[in-house]
Image (cartoon, rainbow, N blue to C red; front, side):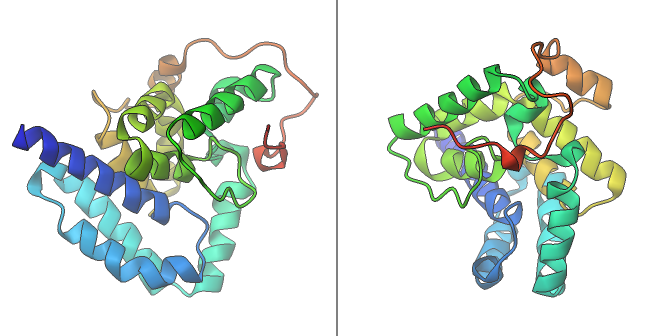
Length: 215
């Protein structure tokens, strides 16, 4: 029982730290970085060397880079390319009508757990938001959402690794909290998601941040 509790604590710490590290960098993040880095340093060996190393590397990048540069780099990396979009259902449902139903399911899960979140204009499937939900509101339901969208998380991880981005460390850490091994390539990661969605809405893909949050 103590081992299970300890492992659950590790997962929640990794999810909480990764939620902050993967969010748009602002003054609040900069202020919290010492506390977040302390949490990473206190992770037990059971967290794994790759998890600790990846989070330390990203934390040092965030700590050692001027905030305007962090913000510009974040937008270029995540917001200007759909290939690294952190909206989980975008990878599985694309621009289809079904995606509206999926986004509603995320919001319903949050409400059912009493999770009150400031979206900041983000959709409810934004990975940092899901990680925060898993860390502080409902670890069981949060882990289930992360596992359901494992393919999306792995594809983002592989994209970031290919670019040599320090943000890959947080994705690697999150994947390490989920059951099973991570896929080695995109084909294996896509296979986790099943067939691609049908019924495309619109002729061209567009930035998922522009989609409205469903009420």
